[in-house]
Length: 523
Image 1 (tube, rainbow, N blue to C red):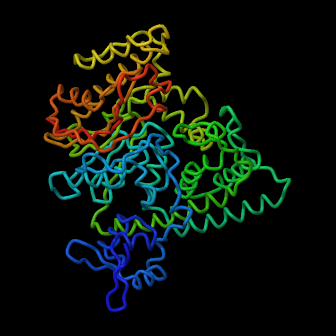
Image 2: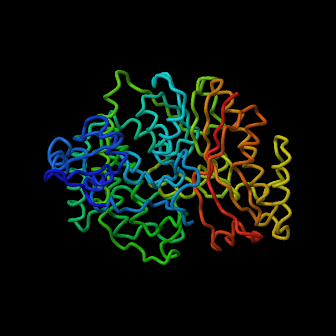
Image 3: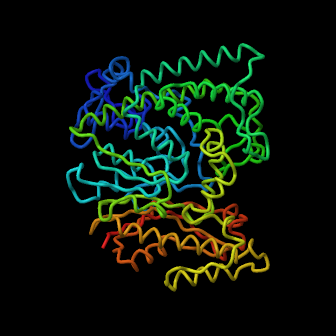
């Protein structure tokens, strides 16, 4: 669509203006509403003069920073391999996928396959009965890298979150604390980092003080020698940063970009580049990639500070670094108005394994025992952690779920733990944790409070498991009222999905994978 012309001035719609300044429509709309960018509301739509935007970009608005082309075009590292339909089936809540966050301030810092889109969280909060923002408390029991907590904070709500993965928890905490950071100090430190790296690399014989994590193992060398030397110099510099918040910003930035210059990639699970038909990364400009990410973060910190300045109070956000199922008692009973979350799906996507590089290289975990412990306490466990144990049974009595598990158990029994029996154990552990989750959530919600839980169906051993409907049954058995099941995302499934080793057994008919937002009301 071409821009409109009026009396020689070029008038842009919100979409045209967002493309012009290279930010998302949502971000530009927010800036227009807060008066930070020159705009005019015509009816229900925003209009922008291109000349005014040009002046804004070169003047007071420059600190927002239009995204460089490389960032603007960057694909999310955790892109799902299944092809996605262009639009969700149910538009009430919108598409929940994190990929919509690629260009959103703060949300774009760390790609995260399990994350929400900021727009989805906004749409959920729009449906909450009106109340003064500071009187609303929102909980995300699986906070990930903080999309829900940030969006609620931006509305002035009190936010509470839980996250078991130390890398995701670090990213979440750093985002929430970033309003206390000094972006000028950060940019000055980035400049020192670039000079430090340049000086070290100029001395060919110079050796880093840092060493690769001794217990980190991979099938192929994770970093090529030239890249690894640069990463170790980066770690040397990070350890020397006096200010803790600036140091953590550097750690999050390194964790965000490190796979991009490694010999691994997310396809969507972490695997070698060679397995994906790509060449190893023999060399890379590590300091350049890292500094670009940090400058992006500095711009977003300024954005958040200006955004929160509108409140005459300081919205609170508390992140508990641990398991919600184990630590929900840290939150007072009947204090939560809204719960928005997405627990791990029944798809055996190994969230712990896929963050091993960040956990080890950032010093968040030291050995495999810590990794295994976290896997064993994560929601739903993983097939690898329960397949060979004794036969599991449900801790509650809902016939429909028992029937599905027994159907899975009867498939490919000759393969033992690698067939139906092992996968039935996994499904049983998963639904037991769904029940534990609902029990814990019931104790924390205020009477009549709203819950939105995004969850996806799956195929185990050729058996479709409609997880959303089964989860709704569990919630209903505990007194929750099921308000609606919104299909927010559909995925086309080809033979690579149906015949994968996870789902071996061959579904008898074509099955559509989808994600549903289960909307509940607390008793």
